[in-house]
Every structure is written in C-alpha cells, then in structure tokens.
Length: 371
Image 1 (cartoon, rainbow, N blue to C red):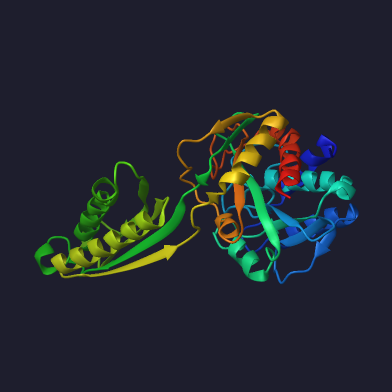
Image 2 (cartoon, helix red, strand yellow):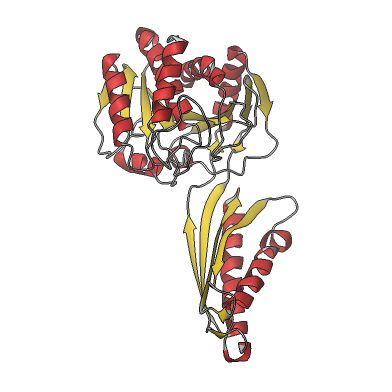
C-alpha cells in the first residue's frame, strides 16, 4: 500500500485548504496533480469541479466514489492543520475520504495488470448540498458501470469498527421552509392584528404530530425544526414569521405521507387563523439502498481487512447523496470508525487519522470482489 505518511499528508493538505460545494477548484487541481504524478488516467467529463479517473483495462467497469467538498463552518480545533479558509472546514471528513480513495487508487494502479476490468474513480463535488452525485450521473460517469461503492467515516465508531446493512442505509432528506404572513401592529392592541407568532407556535406544536400520529410504530421518521424567526423588538407584533427544518424518512410511502401532512397542516392552520402560509418543500437525496449481494461482499472484504463488523438493525438518519449513484446502478455504502469526541458537522470534529491505515485496503479488497 501507499506509504501511510504520504496518505496522512494528503489528508492534512486537503484539511488546510477546504472549499465549499461547487467551489472546489483548487481541490480539483490538487487531485489532478496527484493523479497525474502517479500516471493515473483522467477521463474527461463535463464537470466544473471534481473529476473522474480510471485504472485497469477491459469492458467490465466498477466505480469507487469519494466526496470532496467542505462545510461553511468556523473550525474550533486548535491544531497545526487548522483550516486556512476562514469559516470553511472539513467538518464531515471529506479530506479523510479523498486521502483514502487516493491511496486505494494507487494500490489498484499497482495491481492494474491483475484487474479483470476498469475501476472508475469518482471525485465528486457538492455532496453537502445534496446535488453533486446527481450531477455526475447526468454527466454520464456511470455509463457502463456494473456496481458502485463508497464509504463515510463515522466518529461515533472506534477505529477498527465497520458498520453496514443491506437495504436502507441512510435516510431520505427533505427540507421545508414555511413563510407566515399575518398582520402586525402595536403589542398593546393584539385584537387589531393577526399575530404570526401565535400561528408559528401552533404550527410548531402541530408539526410534532406528523411522526407521533401518522407514522407506524414499526416504521420510523424524523421531523426537526431547525430555525424559527419573527419580530425584532418587545412591543411590536410583526407582520411575518418563518421556520425551516428537515424531514428524514426511509421509504417512499412514509416520505410522501410526511409531506402530505405538512401541506395539510399549513393549509388548515392558514384557514383557521385567516392568514397566508406558504410552504416550500424540497426533496434532497433519497435514502441510500445497499444491494444485498454487494453488502455480503463488503462484509467479506471488511472481515478480511480485520475490521470488527457491525450489522446495523436500523439505517442512519443522516443524508448522503451517494443515493443518486446507487439509484442508478447497484451500490454498497459503509461506515468506518474515525473515533472523534465530536460528531460530523461540529466545529470541534477531529477524526483519528488511524482510519487511513486500513480503509484503503478494505476498498481494494472490495473492488476486486465487485467485478
């Protein structure tokens, strides 16, 4: 395998110079330079950021994917590799992912003569906004591909632990935004106004019934309100109020039901309070569905690598736009322990670099099983 110090250095450079979704221009240049230095073939696709490489020869093609973007988060980790970009941080570990896939690519290149086909390596932009994978699909990167794989580091797992399941592996992600138009006025004369804060409170309470009263105990879903705003001083009733949040589901029926109930609640409360309520409902990534046969191969590869394998009973509630790839061709996606005191998307997230010592080996073993 590639020298571990080199792999760590790749990761540290990516961490120092993060870029947010669709702005990964320098990251793409760094990836291209590394690949070209190691004589890895780069395949031209119509992508503004991100790139595609290949190793091997023949008609059979399998794909290996990594995400490359960072988050608009101000890093709070005091380390020698702290982000040099103010307010931008690899708080989801895509720097770990890139270094891992680069290391796996180098090993696959070394074994190129033994490969029964081609490995198409996808360095994908814009995972954090949920559309980068679909952009790659539309660019044709999966044409001729028989299977695709990838992974995500998991700071809730110890280094050496590996988690997977067949079927739904992550949740479908939807975002909702609700704009309430009432009638403002003097706080001492509420009868002359139509207070949007009262409507906001009613909606907040009612939304919590979507899961508790509409989703079976044998199914699961999450509805979370992440932001509310209304008013700007103590003695004025505002004209408007706003909230936004997310819905996480694991099958199409529950996803549709949650959206339908939210629409009904907005319409009903708007009528009851004689106000205008506008719901904006956005479908983001689907649930990642792991192919059963490919999952078995991933478990075999993980065990051969020496991982402690956990077969999950329930999917993760995080979103992952790898689903656009696995919706197109059979796919398998796993979580590998990175052991941080703080979880993904936290400004103090700090993964353990020991994950880099074995994750590339797992991917190489799995790729060979996918042909």
